[in-house]
Length: 314
Ligand SMILES: NC(=O)C1=CN([C@@H]2O[C@H](COP(=O)(O)OP(=O)(O)OC[C@H]3O[C@@H](n4cnc5c(N)ncnc54)[C@H](OP(=O)(O)O)[C@@H]3O)[C@@H](O)[C@H]2O)C=CC1
Ligand SMILES: CC(=O)N[C@@H](CCC(=O)OP(=O)(O)O)C(=O)O
Image 1 (spheres, rainbow, N blue to C red):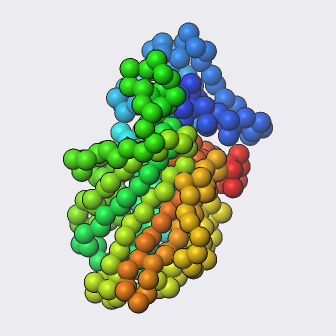
Image 2: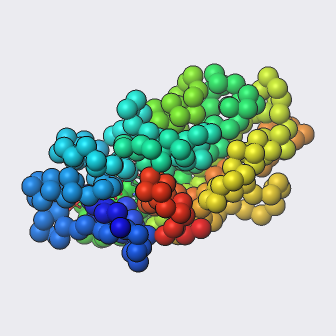
């Protein structure tokens, strides 16, 4: 028997990426609404209550509205929006983040898909905090750059469509200058740290891909860990992961935003200078891959008891 899946917001940037990953999956049947129906509340209510699995690819407010429409107790939901990522009653859909998280997702009825930036930040920081190498009350910062598809259809239009009111020819722009980006509470909660990190995101003139970087003065940490000690903690944390990889030690070459673009992989690097005791923790991923659609399909596979990487671009 196949499981049925309804993607609410299936015509959007993330929804279309999920549909691509679910095409040709014999174990799953996709329920679709055509263009004239996809915003019709009654059609959506029917679909939301008939599918075994629902994936919400909607703005936050619409995601909350969709949840309110679900009355079928058997419906299991994955929400790609920010709406439920720090909600107590939701399971955080980052299987690799904590021991036992995969099992928690497998049994959950409500799973929040991680944000794209938090995916990179948490993958780098959480194992080091858990291992006691970074104290939980250390003041962290995170610099990041995303492809413009990270802003969904509106930002894609602003970068591609000359007739768009927000059209820009910029190559690179920093934003969230007031340090109140919506991803900060998610980063703080799931890293289990005492203070919000200083988060400096930017967007570049490239469609997809991300670099997320956490600079750490190792010399100032109470245990003064080496670069190697940090890399060992990350390798240990992700040793069984098919998607999260720790790159070999070394400072050679460059790190490009395209590194893991168009894939569902997440690559972690520990670079820096042991003599000065300074580290650059760097994650590369695709905002639409492990940062959104890839993670949603991974969570769906886990919840449905299917091969975890089926349909993914490993
Ligand atoms: N893009 C990315 O890299 C990532 C996105 N996300 C999250 O995923 C969610 C979707 O984002 P994204 O795909 O980028 O956004 P898009 O704007 O590209 O897509 C959103 C889709 O939702 C539809 N929609 C909006 N309101 C309603 C409604 N009331 N009922 C039915 N459909 C509706 C839109 O239709 P229409 O365009 O016709 O209004 C559109 O098709 C967001 O919460 C986003 O924050 C998470 C991680 C990464
Ligand atoms: C480049 C860009 O604008 N990115 C978006 C985040 C994209 C994203 O994935 O946010 P959610 O996962 O929370 O939806 C932003 O900074 O708001």
